[in-house]
Amino acid sequence: MRQLSKSRLLVSGVILTGIVLIIGAILIISGEADKPSSYQVLSQLSESDDECVVCHAEQTPGIANQYARSDHFKNDVSCADCHTVDETYPGAQKHPEQEYYVLAKSSPAKCQNCHRQQVEQFNFSRHALPSYVAYAGSEILSPDHLALYQSIPEGGSLPGGKARNSLHALEGEDITKFACETCHNVGKPNPDQSVGDCTACHLRHEFSLEQVRKPETCNACHIGPDHPQWEIYQESPHGIAYMTMGDDWNWDAEPGTLTTVDFAAPTCATCHFSGFGLSATTHDVGDRLSWFLAASISAQRPSAVENRLRMQNVCTACHSAQYIQDFYTNADALTTAVNDLVMFSDKMMQPLKDNNLLTAAPFDEPIDYVYYEVWHHWGRTTKFGAWMQGPDYTQWHGAYELLKDLSELRELIDAKLVAAGLEPLNLPEGFPSLESARAYLYPPTEIAPTETPTEVPTEAPAATEEPTEVVTETATEVPTETATQAP
Image (cartoon, rainbow, N blue to C red):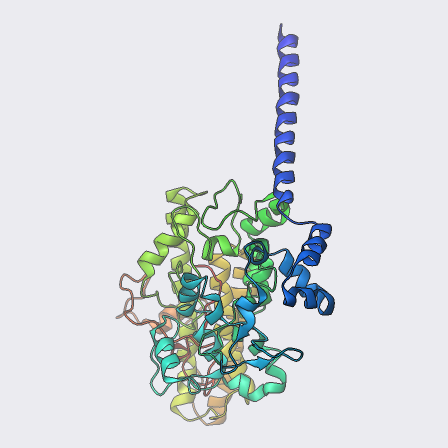
């Protein structure tokens, strides 16, 4: 009897496995059926009576093929709908072979004819004007753009405005047009006064949901020592799930309908943009973030409580309420700890400032770079690593480097003080530990913060990518960008 039961179990298991495989194959085939084959694309192009399509199928077939695969093509959105304008339209160019005018690159002003909500959300996001101002400064903004910039949490009101980024000025535009500007122009004002570039994320001319939902899209900018979100995501449990199982996910699901049936784990878009669980789709990348993590000293966002709930609504699809609560409590504590270490570097630098032992020019001596990297590289990475669950980046690319630079900073400061006939720094025992930093910042008569701040600032710190005038300013005065980062 026992042997018979085992046989039945084995047969049942084989049948069940077969059914699952058949269903999976049907789902895959049905999903692929929606994607036109190369033959279908060529057929669609050859049958088109749109003169733009007919010409560009010959002149620029890559663009035409992308367009033929797009939802725009399926829904009769023509090339003219996005590109054709009046002669007087700002930025209009005469078509080289026709008697009409076009925008060589369409703008959000055209996109919002169909995607108004998405454009409005983007306009109030970190990806819009704050991204551009981070390198270009606010002086070149029109009055309307300046008002918009100051209304955005990552923008805010800066006395005297925001100057051009000092590194951008030092490197020169021959370099930065291939560097800073490549990413930060996602928020550049256009001649028609619209803001930004939708195609920075939604690549022309296919505008694929799959492409924009995959994390590789975000790694074009969110990578490197100052904001290594891509690298952190790769080593996180979420990233591992994507890289090992993502081929089977439902990348073309309708916006706003995503569930764990479609995605077994989140991508950048799932957490920060997609309609998922109880959270609606958004094009404001800060809508679910509770901290200004990229700032030198991270403060909570004006809508931190509401933002946190929106992010946690996504988390609850896979995680228990207790897990989420514990995670946020621990990550909040780490953020406060990194704040203390960065403020420690500020206080260490203060004697040099008080005695005019620093040059006025930015980035003209080694101490400027070390002081800057304490917060801009290592402080940020420690925070990003924790919130995005990348332990190696929290430790070896973050906290370790932060402590190392604090040690080097001490030597550089002491050398300047002694050369000026002053006493070197008198730092607490255990330097450069967090305990010693807190002992230096908060003498026994004061109390160091150990919990998440209970009050949310009424005004967010101004977002800048780098120091804008002199690197020797206190780091607390130089908050910076947030990106597609975790909370």
